[in-house]
Length: 284
Length: 319
Image (cartoon, rainbow over all chains, first blue to last red; front, side, top):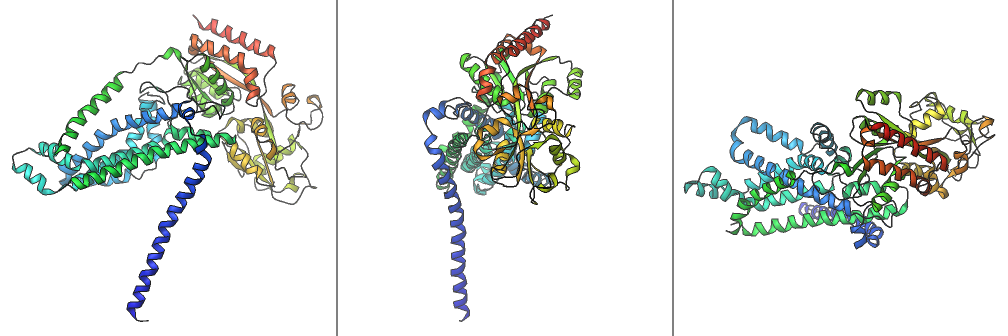
């Protein structure tokens, strides 16, 4: 066998290995989804979505947990998006030549890797105890906002970096100030990337359980929050609570609630992919 | 370019919305009741709250499960109004509350029994004495009492696999106090979990297992487990080994592994009509709901006594 044939063979082997690696991931996901759908799909109904939690598994629903999750999502976005985008813009457009900007950059990247339970402890001390917010929607949203802030900053920076230099230079040449250039040219041009980052960060926040448990999100809340200082439950906490009960029927409820949570995160990811593709086509 | 206007209009709008949302901080503290504490008392409190919320839709009652100790910590910090407890308040916790000027009363709402269980295929264990349990679970037993024959010579020469409540739970406090004699003293080489379901899973799949947890969990998993009758070797408490049941817990013959279920109400909370109504409802419904969730209700006259005690506490609370 000459070297060319050997190389071809190696190429073919690598292709098969790569294919198997891809299929393994897909297979595991398929097994997981199949088990989940088989257990939980029959339990999903309008009644399940609109019922209060209950000690009777057949009467219990996810109404309060679902609304809690929606509240957290909205509040987290309101808190984290302006901060994260502003920080990203600053680091990319204004602060990039400073030496401490490099230090900041390393720290932000590191923060993105801190385990979420640590953010929970921070939230417990700062928001729940020190600021006396209690185990409220606002405290949870603030904690999750901190958690996704590094992701948002990194996403914003990368989106801004992708904006062609010529666009900025043209704007500046026409007499626009730096701020006008950012507001009217850079941000609109990078909106697709930033929105994608925001949505991916939010879909992560929605699925987080550990920080919520640490700040003391409660096991049983039979009402939906009506303002930011109300106590609440959230889907991941409700799922955790149901799974830790001995009765098998609560396991079925948990599977159904996981399906709802997956629909939310898959939906968010789908919107992110759609936005990314749309904006990519529009850019020159 | 249509994308121009999106952030320009979007951002101020978002900020406005944020202000509007945080601006309407308008709590109705009168109807709010915060309950936290023991995971053992949680099922009955949850049942009571569910029934209460159905009858009083305006009520805003939340229940947490921080464990008895965690509940008392929050209780003394006045973060909650009612503490669920599966043991009486400790002296250190009493001091903590006293330092912060929090007065309270305890109300008994029922009983719980701890079950000692083995795998159903375990043919050798018919009963255990409290002494044997102590030899098995005391701190000195670690690495020494590791095989079944160490407990009784006629039992098999096979490893013994221990399962028990995690050290943060009231169940663990209670078991160690009742069996070893000192709260929080036990061997460390056992499978510990705060989640009784994990223990049920572990014991029901391991032929050499022995474990303990709440009687309610045994009831819910009867088919998968074998109950071990306990002999406290005190004839006045019923002679010979006694298995837990509604009767033996109520008449105190299943000693020392049955315990009270308590709720603590702070004085500031006791002044509020919403809390008063809730506690009355709790004691009214406890006999039915305790049985429903697998606990053991008290005789009716004891509930009347607790009602009277709480009424006296309320009338003292008003200056």
